[in-house]
Image 1 (tube, rainbow, N blue to C red):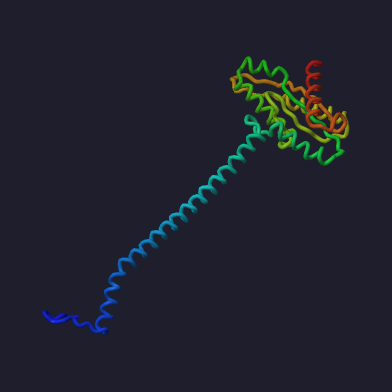
Image 2: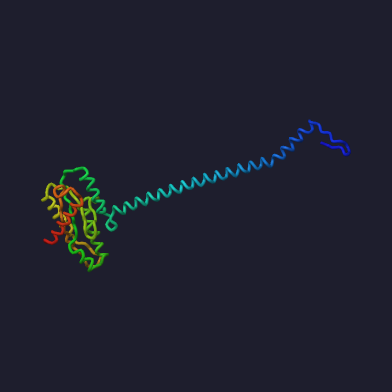
Length: 231
């Protein structure tokens, strides 16, 4: 649009409209750019929030897996004796309750409470490392004699296992066979030194003496104590 100098400015509608639209469009460019930038920033915020959410979900899943693994490890530690690898006393009792008491099994089961005579003297003379070696050897003999999942290490030199028997005499004969088997010489890791453990066994019968696992263990422990006092 040209404007002659010194003459009145005459604007035709046709000339004004396109140039006005062009100016308005030019003026709208910064506003349009601002809106696009705002939307762009909003999208970035949304993307970052989604990424944080995904990362948080991944972290929570990882933590959940770690907690699950730790629970399993804790359960294993709780159910397993750290020295021998045998099941713990609590695990043995729960297995016995699940297998026999809860099922109201009428089968006669003998509970054997086994320990080593004069085990304290072994610890006092040779030390706890040698005592642990004796425990490991006795545990190995018991596992070879009965089912691995049925032998538990209660504490120190005390072991418990169960076995189905026809009657009391059959349980006594089984205990006598175990005593002969456990008297095999054990090498103590000291040159020229071996130990021949003298086991003592106490027996309680399910369901004859009780149908409660703790009471059965108490009866077997008392029988074991009586056996050591008698012989």
